[in-house]
Amino acid sequence: MTMEKDSEEILRINNLFYEALGTRNLELMGEVWVKDSRSGCVHPGWTALRNWEAIRQSWESVFDPEDQVDISISNVTVDINDNIAWVTCLQEMVYIKRDPVMFNLSQSTNIFEKQEGGWLMIFHHASPIPVRGYEPDKKTIQ
Image 1 (cartoon, helix red, strand yellow):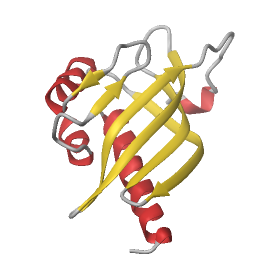
Image 2 (cartoon, helix red, strand yellow):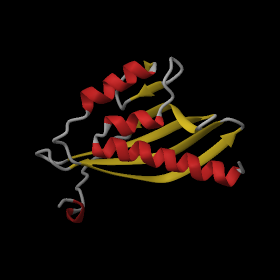
Image 3 (tube, helix red, strand yellow):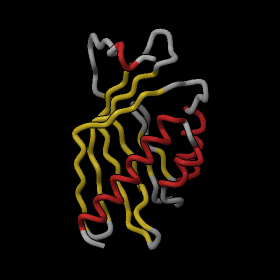
Image 4 (cartoon, helix red, strand yellow):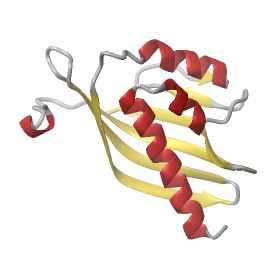
């Protein structure tokens, strides 16, 4: 696979991760992760979780099916070194069905490993960025 094709595939998997996060889809979330003890996750404000089972349980506990989350990512970069790649981005999350509406901005690093079947996430780390006086754009709230 060429570097360009790898980059496209990594971004596709990265976008699936954010789709799973936004739609609160645990099954889709499971499709993007490596399923062993090497996997790790740091949710904003949490300590590190290690191994897929702990990570899956964390998503299960934070996914509220009644929640409506609008997620956008920006400042996306992809770096590849052999069978390891990392994506950095800003992740903006607006929790629309909460009163008041909540906004979260985080700097994220997502690390991927190339497997026989393609690229899978091995680590997700999101660090919160304090935001003062944020008012969501009324056009994003439907």
